[in-house]
Image (cartoon, rainbow, N blue to C red; front, top):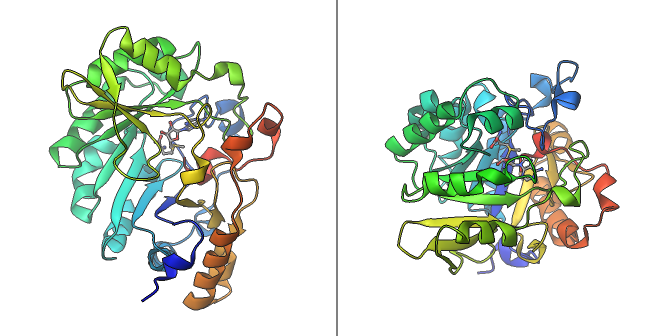
Length: 335
Ligand code: SAM
């Protein structure tokens, strides 16, 4: 029998759901405090999708082929009772549940997340050096707090853990080797991410981007590494392994080696807008459709149509000029 997913032009495997636009970090490359500081107005609770609405949409996305949902934000651990949402989503058969977090609240919450049914976690950490970490994320606690979160996640079995490091030239590129060395042999995979022009507020310049090629070269000064095959088609991180068997690292090179052609990812923003590209300028208002009382069939047909019509491939078209487009902010769409 033909699956609904067979009718879609390109497979839809992953769904990212931003559960809040709030964050306890003000990363210079994501939510600069000049824009997201004291005066910024975040979404009111009633503007966010409820857990019931998220679950309903998740069920429909699963019918279209989605096999993995990642909760993100803002900072997902700031969404009240996030564990309840996880337990609701965990009732959907055949779904892998993941989360991306800055790790600041993870030490206390790891067990609860695991018990609720979370399968995987990615922790963002841009430096192993306290001064760089604090400056980049505008926080006043040490890296150790995030490391404690990673350790707690490991202890409860959320393994293997991925650690995301966004590399920005002149800001934290001196810590590439430090991060690689710290996590080498721990079983956790550091993924080095090229700094991207997400949103319209981070003042992105091409000169700030440290390419994956440069990052690899930096690591090769100290360690012998070699590329390895992807785990699955459409994997965004290019995998490398230490030749001496001390684990692997990943390179996410969406600026210098875009991977739009194999993108299987849809995104739901904190206020229920559907985006088929991280760099989208306009989302489709799924929240309105839900609040209008549309049936599952109507929502499913709308999603199918949207996914089939998608032509976005921003990273392949990026120039210095496209950077100023009014793209959705990372805190709304969640990376
Ligand atoms: N608050 C959570 C966190 O810090 O992981 C989830 C949201 S955050 C927007 C998701 C991921 O996007 C993080 O790994 C973050 O480092 C990455 N990110 C944010 N802005 C970025 C940018 N301009 N370029 C590349 N990655 C970015």
